[in-house]
Amino acid sequence: MKILLRIHLYLGLCAGIFLLILGITGAITAFEEDTELWLHRQLHYVRPGGQALSEGELIERVNQELAPARVVFMKAYPQTGRSRVMLMIEGKASVPVTETSIGNWRNWVARKRVAVFVNPYDGSIIGRYTDLPQNQKILAAIHQFHMRLAPDPRSWGAISKFTREVVDYAGLALCLLAPTGVILWWRTRRARIKWSGSWFRVCFDVHNAAGIYAAIFLFAAALTGVVIGFNSVTQAIYTVTGSKQIWHSGGPDSTPVEGGTPIGVDRAVQIAREQIPEAALDGITLPRTPKQSYIVLMRVPEEVTDVVHSSVVVDQFSGRPLQVLNFRKDSLAYRVIRMNRAIHTGDLFGTFGHVVFALSSVVLVAMVATGVVIWWKKLAI
Image (tube, rainbow, N blue to C red; front, top):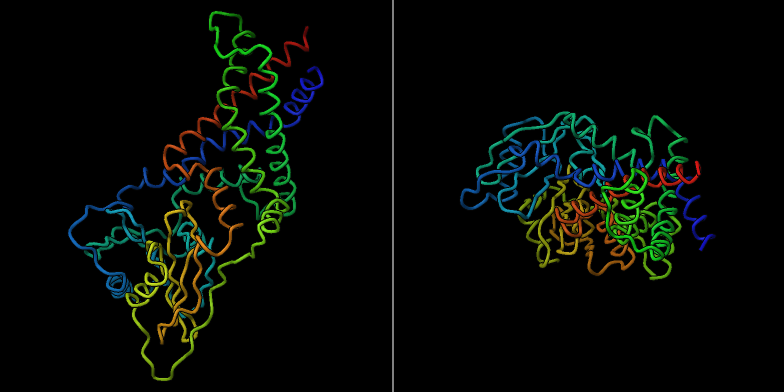
């Protein structure tokens, strides 16, 4: 037991400062998505008013009002009363389509491009972003600090790669601290806090009581963080499941038809829904050249994170489905990885999950602080 105590002690001391940072930043980033909705509710929510306009009608109205800028992507939400987000660009520049760029309007705006919020019931423009709000910039910096200990990894260069590894190994340390802490707790089984006791006694009780109640959540956060952080773990999941890595790269090209008329946006969405009938529309990328295709992002019920995998690539002239990616069928490894991320962020259980993991992060901060007090007191003795 003494050996286990030493392992627990020295792991905590080595990783303590980094776990403290992860706890503070983790508590904040748990509500990263919710914060935007809370602070700028007028952009994201509208009063439902009858039948919503079709995607094609909405895009055409915005194109007419904001010409010469053109919509290149429309973000949709399945919830009633949510606005649509149109990403726009001027000129004929080709826009790359990836899971983490155009599908995320924040990344789009961060690249100094325009995001327009539209009422789906009447096509009116509610507002627009040409630059990220200050709260989003702060949250983005905190998010990067949580992942890499660097608010702007691009300016840190190779250092951010090293600090990312530091974070990953701190998470690995927490994977060991949680179970060893439970074993050590079993000796005293203190699950209550005697607030009338000495300062040291209160810290000791908080460390024990908070630790045992939050152990499973801390271990889950640490383990899922390790899976996210270590590429070797990701590769092992693909190897064990025999899965292939499938990425959104823009999809197959359309076959140009001289003098041909492209199918409309609504027809492309209809074709995508026929391919994955159980999914809801999440967004659509519009072709800007004769060779580009419609890329319709679809969200099946199991996809609870901000990024979706399911999509249908549709030839803009023939309407033929060129590629169908279905989260439920394509890759077991990918489903495991995305579910792992949903657990880590709390997305799996919605707002309740965010609250639970935010509180777990706060507990981690308390565990580090009280752990240092306990160590310091015993050192003085």
